[in-house]
Length: 400
Image 1: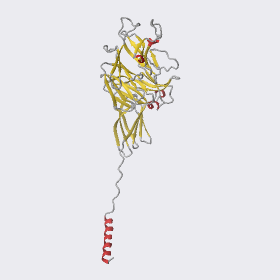
Image 2: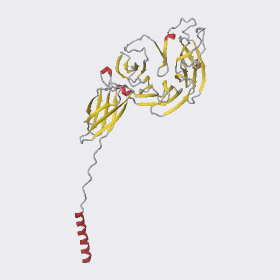
Image 3: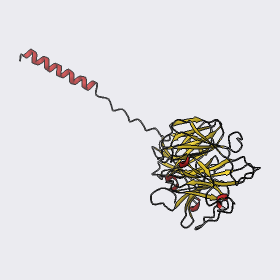
C-alpha cells in the first residue's frame, strides 16, 4: 500500500468517527400509554331461593376506580351497589331491583385509572343468550327433534316461520290465509298441522296440513259432528292437538258454546278423527277425556300426556300456583332426570320434582311467554313481542 493511500484511509476513518460524535443516536421513543378500555361484560342471574340478586360485571384492561354507575331509564330508581374485583380490573354491581331474565337494560358507567384517565360510556346488558326479531307477533312454536330449528306461528302478518337455534340466520317464511292459533309437528308423516284462532269464523272448523319443505297446504281436515254432539251446536273447532311417533294422536274439539271433548286423530288411517273407545256413545265412559285442557307428547313421542285444570297432583307438591298461564318442561341436561323448568306469573325457575324443592327462581320478562327446553339440554326457548329469545341453560345454574 502506498503512503498516499494509507493516509487517505486514515483521514476517512477519522472523519467518520467525528461525525458519529457530532450526531450520536437519539433516545428511544417513549412507550405509548395503554388507553383505558372496557373489554367485556357479563350478566349473572340471581336466585330468590338463596336471596341472591342479579349481578352485572364490567371488565377493563386496567385497574380502575368507580366514579359512577347509572341506570339510563327513568321507570326504575335502583339502589346500585358495586365492588371492584379481580385485582381492580373489574367492577361488579347489583341491587338493580328492576331486572328480569330476558330483559334489556342500559347503564352508564364512569371509571378512572391510576394515571387519571377517565372513561365514561354506555352499555346495554342483554339478559339472554340470543334474540331473533320477527315482523309478526308470535303466538306459538315448536322445536325440531334435532334441536336445530324452531318453527313459529305469527299473526300480523299470518305466517309460519323457521329459525335456527344456533345462530340468528333467518331460514323460511310461509304466508297463511287464516289467523293461526297453533302449529304442531307430526313426525309420523313429517307434516305440520295448523289450526286457526277461535274468532276466525271462516276457517276455524278446519285443520290445515302443511309440507314444511315447500310451505304448501296439502290437506284440509274439516271437523264434523258425531253422535255425541248436541244437534243445536254443530259448529266445531280445534283447540289443541298432539301426535305420538306412530301418528296416533288426540285432538281437543270445542263446539260453539265451548263444550269440549277429546277425540282421536289417527294419521295411519289418513288422519281419521273418531271417538276414543273408552268414551262410549252413551257418554258415560272416561270422563277425563272431557276435562283435559292441554296435551303434548313426551321427548321421544312414545307417550302423550295431558293436563287438567285444577287437577290434583300425585307425589311431591311445589306450591307454586299453576292456574294462570303456567308452563313447564323437563331438563334434559346430563344427570338431571328429576328436574323441570317452570314459568308461572313471570317467575321462572328449576324444581326437583322428586321432593318438590324449588332450587332456583328469578323474575322473567313481562314481554315473554311460553318456555320449551331442547332435548340436548342446551337451551330454553321463549317467545315475546315480535321476537324469540334463546337462553343457554347454564344461565340458570350459576347460583344454585
